[in-house]
Image 1 (tube, rainbow, N blue to C red):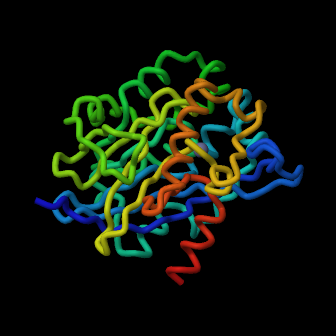
Image 2: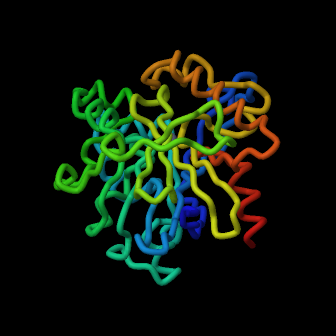
Length: 283
Ligand SMILES: [Zn+2]
């Protein structure tokens, strides 16, 4: 039985700016744009699903005071009203209540800022990620880009951990990754652990209706160019990472996928080239 195909749209929900030379070895000192990209997916029976939420006005609230304000100083953000996730969904005739699931790549503020906006959604994440966030102090968490104020009060009642779902062999195109988790039990969306940037980061692999395969990789790398040219982030950026060693291993595994002739389309959450080409293709 073939796994259900998903409708997929890539959305940019705000962006921040940061010097290129921090994000990529050999980059320029000039600031570059880091779009906050999310996936909007529709499953034939599970309905509307988000992969991450990008920025939201909750992020601005949560970083109004010191010390959380430092997060916004380091990565100044832009979120025009028409670019909020709620506004973009509404423009497509989708209400906040229509979103049934939010898959969370990892719990950094720029990925979960919109969780509070989706009252009917279950949250799908790795237990390892949630537990790591819960263990951190206010300052310790902030230094790793966690903002607990963004978490819905009833998160614990609505979370589903991928570690509790069935293991699933991954398609050959995803080698060297071999096993993932079958989020919906029908093979339509497979979660792949991508540790390093954060402890319990996950990516998702799925096929679109036209059969094209997509692998959303969160912050396991910040651009496809960095994979192709072997230019990982510098030590400055690595300081927020959970483990530089795990990051390097995951980065190298993604490089091997990118080198396949029939590799899935890799979508890093902040890749400006991916966003520009997606926008041009769908314009
Ligand atoms: Zn991020």
